[in-house]
Image (cartoon, rainbow, N blue to C red; front, side, top):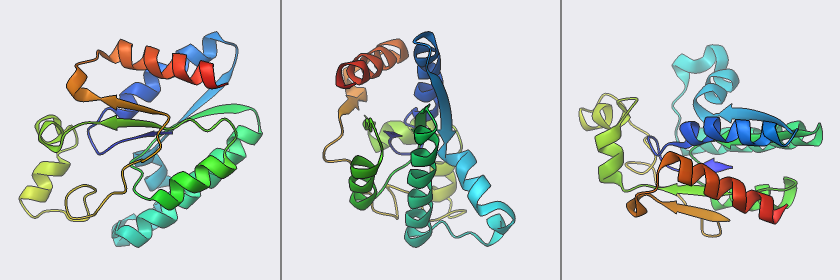
Length: 170
C-alpha cells in the first residue's frame, strides 16, 4: 500500500516494483488511485465532488478490491492518496501480508513537481478538495516504511528499500 500526496511518486514506485515481484515468480498487479477513481466513479465522474465522504467510500472500495485480489494469489501494489486512519487500520486487520509505505514529500516540492497540475489548478481556484491543501489528511502513524524525500534517495534506492523490507516481513 503505497501512499503519499499527489506528485509524491506513488505510481512511479509501484511500476518499478512490479518486475521485482515477477522475478520471484509472483503475480503482481498494480492498482493506481487515479485509474481506480475513474473505474468506480464511471459515468458519474462529472457529478463527483471527491470530498472527504466520497474519498472515504473510495478508500473502502480499494481495500475490498485489494483483499479480493490478494485472496486469489496476486501481489497487489496499490498507489493511492490515503487519508484516513480508519482505512489504515482496516487494511492492517484485513489484508494478508499488508505492507504500508509512506512517501513523505514536502508540500513545496510537490507543488514544484505538480505532474498533473493539481496544485496549480488549486491555486487558481479551478479545483478544490485537494488532499493536503483544503482537505486534511491523516498521515500514516504506523507505516512499515517511511521514505523521506529530504534524504535524496534515487528511485532505485527507494524501490530496493521497499522490496527488501517487504521480503524481510514475509
